[in-house]
Amino acid sequence: MLGPHNIRKNDMPKEMRFLFDKYPRDSWPAHPGFADRTRHWLGAHKMFRHVAERIRLKTEDVLDAIIPMDDYAHQLSQYGGSLVTNLHGHHGWEDRNFFPELMAADPRFETGLDLLEKDHADLDTVLDRFTQTANRLIKLSTMDEAQALQEAGHVHETGLTIESFLKRHLGDEEELSVPIILHYRLRG
Image (tube, rainbow, N blue to C red; front, top):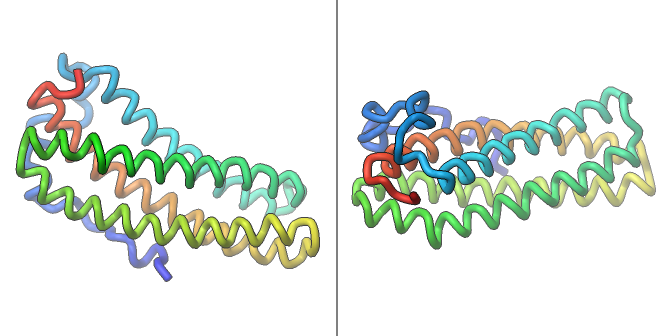
């Protein structure tokens, strides 16, 4: 089982930061090569972070008896399904379209790609566990609320893992990719 302690916590390796010092995050929006397509990609990342946080907060609400279980189960189904489906689709698109474009522009991207691909595989494991746990909770919510509340503790733990994972992974992915996009004026 992959938990928060198994997620890579160290900074992106120096060899992955080959253009980041030249194009730091706070300079991106003002750069003439910062096109709408890059803004949309970063917007998707922001949305993933937001939905993961929302799942965690709603789980805390049900555990603290702030919202009823049936409301929580409905929201978990909606937000959880959206997060898992959209993350899988997003990573598939990156693997097929986005990452090959970056690799063609700068072969040094391959060093970081290996790390990002391992992250994607690890995230798939966490998302599968989340899906199984969330589905179990949703079924239990109509049969046995006490067991559903117990399962909510597992959803919360997995949600924390997802939130932590996305914070680190998406940050690394952005700090590797956007400087390449800006340097070579891609995606404009």
